[in-house]
Each structure stands twice: as structure tokens, then as C-alpha cells.
Length: 354
Image (cartoon, rainbow, N blue to C red; front, side, top):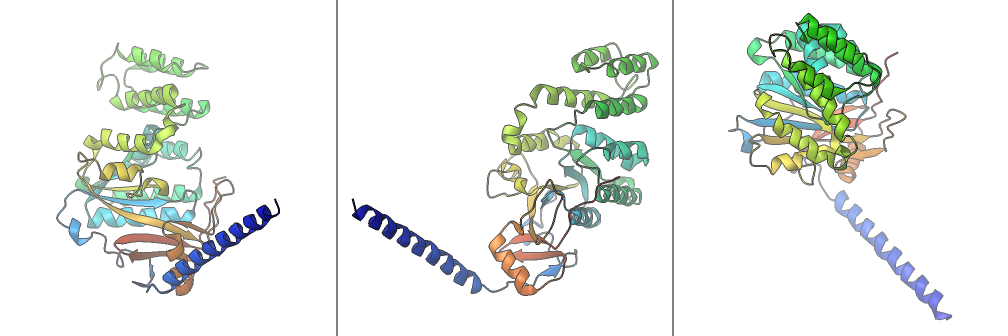
């Protein structure tokens, strides 16, 4: 009996020894690794945007990732879009938004009608100054492009904002702009004004009228999206990576030119079962994927989205390179072993609209 505590302590001591030795060896290995390229300010003159093995492709998907809630994310995203539109024939932008988000954003960009933008910005996760500035800049950029280079945002998410006040405002706006028949418009407004919106009943109503004469197909897409979300929201989050991947494939007939996408960073890793992984391994998806992995060092975020001091991909290596380079707060680019990294140093969370 007396030997049991001694044996136990002996085993614990050896375990601690081997764990300590493991981390010492890892540290020595990292310390011996050269800095393959210097960390650089993030701008497109520093980035080899298309690797040589993808130069022959006319179907490219540029994919960046983010930890949601940081102000610098929108700076990076706009830089990608504004440069890729001009340099790489990007015309399709995929984003983690809903069909209703797509409806509001594309109409704002096309028409410069702030009714669409204001409703879009009225609810989380878009009710931030940085979001507002980003979409205004996107509208201004698109207004300078010829018709053959205009960009279109395509949503690939499975969520809809089912807050009753928001839904009613959305459909009042859609009915006003997408329904030409006064009788249909009046009936729809009465249905939307009900305490509970019955999407099945509303869809039946449209059978009495002619699409593209009495109403635009856009409003049917909106109703179908909310109806689908209402029926399936209890189960859709179980494998969100797969649902996002399926939505990307379902909508590929709407894609023009090359693609740029910016998703939450968990969706972009082609090395594990993420949205990007499913796309890369699907032979029906013909676009070659070029990934830009995010890393965050010493950043702060929104109170309800906490962030660690070192967060993102390849943390041990990138933490070392950031500290060794002694860079100031900013956004940087680094390439290592064929992988691209966007490094955010000392960045802050977004600022909520008042």
C-alpha cells in the first residue's frame, strides 16, 4: 500500500519530464527556422496573387478568412475586391449572408437607394460603422465600372433574420419595388401585416398572377428562403460547413467571371473538413481555390466576441515572426511554404452604429 503513492508520483514526474522535453524541442526547432520572407505591409504590390501552377486557369476562386468583429477585416476585404476586380476579372463576390442580405445589398449597389442599405445595417451583425463605410465604398467602386465588369454579391448562408419587425420591413420594401399588380400588392401587404406570417399561404397567392408581369421572381426567392429557414432552422447548424458548400454549388449558374469570397476563418481550411475542403474535393466545382489564411496578434474585439492574444492559423510560427519583426500595429502579408497569411496586429473591434 505504501508503494502506491510513490509509484504514482514517479509516473507523474516522468510524464511532466517528457511533456517539458517535447515543448523544449519544439521551441528549439522553431528557433532554428529561418524567416523565409520578411513580413510585409498588406498591399497588392507585395502579393503573388496567382501562383504559377494556376496561371492557366480562367476559373479562379480567391478565398480569404476572418475572425468576425474586427474593424481591419473590412479594410482587407475591400482591398481584395477593389484589386481583384481590376486585375483578375473577379465579378462574383460570395459572402456569409442570407438571400435577404443579398437582395438588400445588390439593390443598394445598383440603385444607390439608401432604403436598402439602412435596413441592411439595422440589425446585427451589420450594424457597425465599418460595415456602412465598406458598403458605401463598394457602391462607389461599382459605379465606376463598365457594365461588363460590374460585381454581384451572392449569399451562400443558411440563416435568415426572422425578427418580426425586420421581416415586415423587408417585405414591405420588396412588395413596393418587386410587385407591379396593385391587387396582388394589397393582398400581400395584408398577409405580411398578420401577427404570424404564413409563407405557404403567401406562395399560393402568387399562383393567381403572372411572374415577370405582375411581380418579379426576386420576391419569390425571398419568400422561399424565409420559408425554408422557418422549417429547417432547428437542424441546419449541425453541419454548417456542408450546407454552405451545397449552397455555393446550387448557385453556380449565377457566377460571372472569377470569384472572391470572404468567410469566417473556420470555413476556409482546405486541409480539414470545412466548406473550402468540400469545394476543393468536388470535381464538379471547376474553380481553382487560392486561400489567404488570417492570423491575429494582440487584437481586441467586440465584448461578446472575445479574441485570444494569438489566434488564427499557424499560431506558433506567426507569433514568433511578428515578435521578431517588431512590427507596429497594422495589417501585414506573409508567405510560407506556399501558404498565404494575412496578419492583423494590434487591431480593434468594430464600432456599433448609434
